[in-house]
Length: 454
Image 1 (cartoon, rainbow, N blue to C red):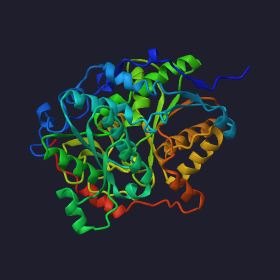
Image 2: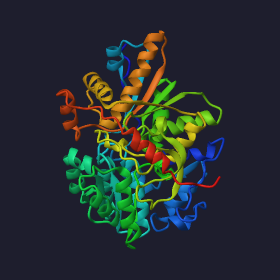
Image 3: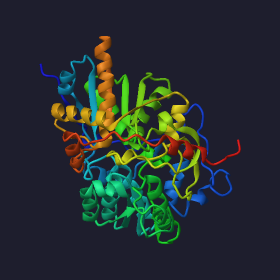
Image 4: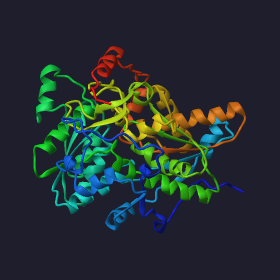
């Protein structure tokens, strides 16, 4: 009898609540601090940037937060997303392991990012906001917020990191098709951007710089709010719809993962797949290995320092305690632009500090090799970011092969690579370079971390 490959839920099985891991943590995370006073932030401190409903979610310790019905109605365009048993990949690897992937590339924007873009736009629309500004690396988040803005009649302006703006023109075209304005960052539209360009006219940009530009625009325009696609607590919580669906689908499959793998840049898709399973563990359930896979050229979890730092380069944001490479650190221009961030989500960082998750890092050629193997076995071309999760899952499957034991591996295939084919062309032509980061620059950035009293 042929084993089933795809596990689908109907719309009635879609989760009605987001899961908040903060409710189950054995130790609470350190609070975010005001950049001026270094005192813990209050809700009013965030009011210039976010609507109050999102601020309340950011500080909530409730285990479940209801998903508004209008948001769930939009989600029905593509959710629940499929869970797939990777039989052909297992065969190609010759592994006794069972491999499942949750495929988020079925969304209109081609990634997991609409899972938070839709609720963020909806809450802003409910608060009467008419314009949102944001940053994006590879463009997955920017295109997702552009899509959400079109649905809820909100103007969207996106600052896209220059190197990705140049590498991925079709993501820019997608944003513009949805009605957003896309600007290469650093730009001449902000004080922050102009200052950087005056010193480095050919600066490749970074997510830290793009965040500075977006926050500056939001803070200086009363009609504009800011939206962030990763890192913050409420963003990670919105993504937990992924893991909650996966729990139900694995029950359908009669299976339960021993290892969960996700790529990590800011932490949102990793949190989406891992947090619901981790919550069960924290409440006395099965213990699993949870592995965060990051780029070797921007290794915040494996090389960064767990310390208070700014989320942006111009130091306009609050200070959060996270694994950081330093807010002035500019990663090399590798193709997984969504993972080129100097810091890691405070909640993910906190879990790493508590030894509840593991972290590893791989170079981009090794990740593309894994992505090509996956595409030839399973038919889906992963985004460069998702290739890191594919690589992590393959490493785990080959470990099972070497040890002669079977385990169940689950990973999040967080997006397709249809807008990233130039990077695959470079890989096939042998032109994809594993760019190392500058050790001296990293040392300087870490030496410049803000001094925060104990």
